[in-house]
Image (cartoon, rainbow, N blue to C red; front, top):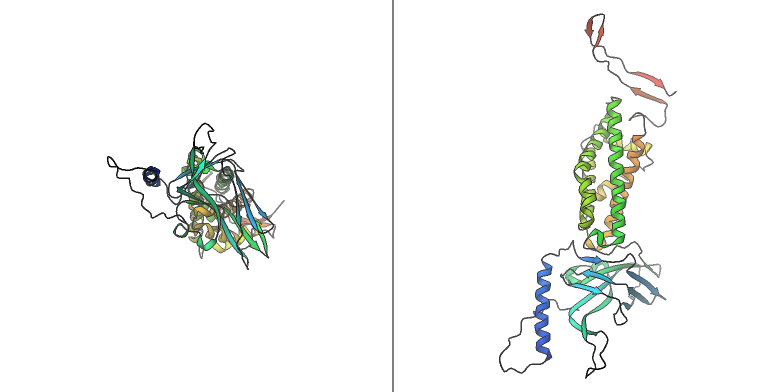
Length: 384
């Protein structure tokens, strides 16, 4: 295990002292530790990970349920400590690793961890035959792959010079690699998989803005004032307000922001919808949820549960895929609901009947030179 608490102090150089390579290594360690300290000022638990990567920079496989095989393509990462490390191309670059699988007796979830020791040097590069003694000209930090249980996945136990790169599961004596795992990234644009999620979320948000506008316009044009229409109108108006101040920023700057910014926007959206619905408690909330369940092919309680899961979600930078699952599920449900509701002639109509209620008010009309206000009674009629 890397001893991160060890202090690497500058060497006390004195005239006439006997020097050897240990002094230079100690001085270099001091430089490394100082540079990591400065870099750590700009790194937070929300901003470490991939700096630049290809879509398929990482390949993993399980060999006969005995070993985990890992292979890297060139990738640039920043560890939670602030130390930056690059896996490069070249015959002498270590990019293939093997790690024994845990001897588990029950089903469990494990994480694959890349660890880097900046103070442990490994010879690197092509030797120059003209030199004597022959040596590899450079050094690179020691890296290794390990497998840890989920409850040990913390900075306290792992240290800061690590990056979680995958998740594996053991189920019914069979080991599987979780292909849905998303490696932590410094920016959304740093990880092609995460950038795909960003584009998917943008499509959902644009659709939600579009359908919300159609619903608000239709409710106003047809002067619908029943409780269901009022509740839906309030939700859509607040969604439009959110999109008005957030969507442009999302399109322009969010790709170059930390991943949690994308999650926070959807959490804000979920809180707005949930709080608005809760405001109708006792005067239309339950009827509204039943109504969207009937019309929008949503199971009873599914939408409210999706809202609650996003609102209460605790973001973990090492488990971005869990955040993505929740926000995409909610946005997909909301888009589906608003799309269907925007196509209805009237909000509040029961799905099992051909009758609906329409209420109209005739504003002031001039009749034979006198202005009187007439109100038309509610009336019922069937679908033509």
